[in-house]
Image 1 (tube, rainbow, N blue to C red):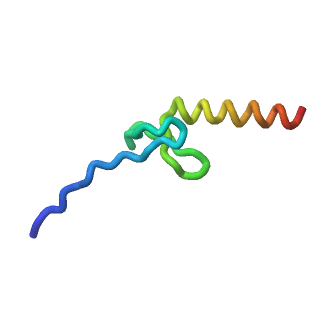
Image 2 (cartoon, rainbow, N blue to C red):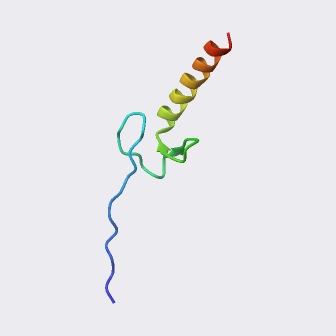
Image 3 (cartoon, rainbow, N blue to C red):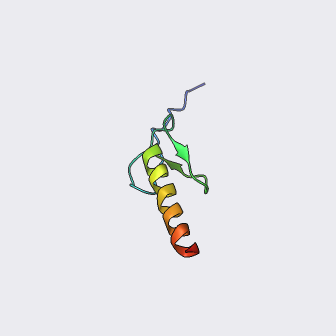
Length: 55
């Protein structure tokens, strides 16, 4: 038999558009891989938008 080479694949962060290492990835509510910093920043933005709407 032959061995199929693994393709180097890293998902792209939907916030900064840079590759994300799967070992370091966080998952957003839509199941997309993100950097931890990008994920935290997106949560902060969502929280501030929600607060402005409810005020």
